[in-house]
Amino acid sequence: MTVSAGATGAFHCACAALFNPGDEVMLFEPYYQYHISALAAVEAIPVVVHMQPPSWTYSLAELEQVVTKKTKAIIVNSPGNPTGKVFSRLELETLAEFACRHDLFVFTDEIYEYFLYDGRTHVSMATLPDMAERTITIGGYSKTFSVTGWRIGYSVAAKPWASAIGAMNDLLYVCAPAPLQIGVARGIRNLPDDFYRSLARDYQHKRDRFCSALAKAGLTPSIPEGAYYVLADVSRLPGDSGKARAMYLLKTTGVAGVPGEAFIPGVAGANFSGAR
View 1 (cartoon, rainbow, N blue to C red):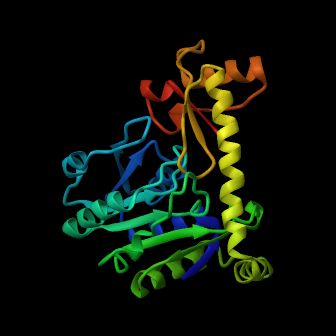
View 2 (cartoon, rainbow, N blue to C red):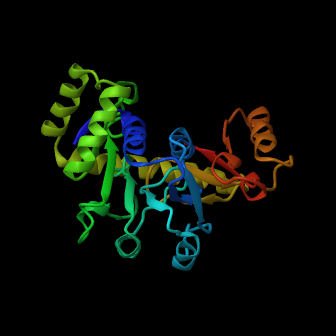
């Protein structure tokens, strides 16, 4: 296990340690832009697999179409930013079989593992058969404990990969501040299980209120299954781009949104706006 400067720092270190220039890495769209940026920083090549709204499903056939001999890994973000998608056990088992068959790493971003709605459960890819050796699990407590400024993230991997990631973390970040690590460790040890259940209940209530307001405003939301982001259909608003529609929304209501092109490039992204 390597403690790093936030989950983003942990992800960056893992990419720097395990990817070479030209390696192809598959990830699902809509995606978290940082994942793309971290791949670009190490000259890896992102290969997009499209998910279809509103339930954000994907096709195994598309995975097979885009995998090549240069493919090194696949990124799974669950619960996801910005869709709120929670990959089911069946979906993860399908991805696990795919990864084993093509000898791929699986990088998982599980920072929102406790933000789960409607009775869903989080399944960590590394717990599935034959996946512990090839999974790089990324997580953290910035969101769970509402201490984003503390930058406490971590990665968990098999020893050979963990050693390489740890060496890269020492070069890039040295370490997360020790007093803040101690504070988070105490929270992990002392907070009761109901803290995590209460967190999910509170955020589900907020999700329901926010999505209801969006629906009443005619901005149909994609109901998130986890995390705390919502993608809404803003195609009815004036403007020919996601930015133009986001600026219209800001000027007329005072509500800020992220242009959909940040998560889905091109015309398709222009129809969405993201909020948290």
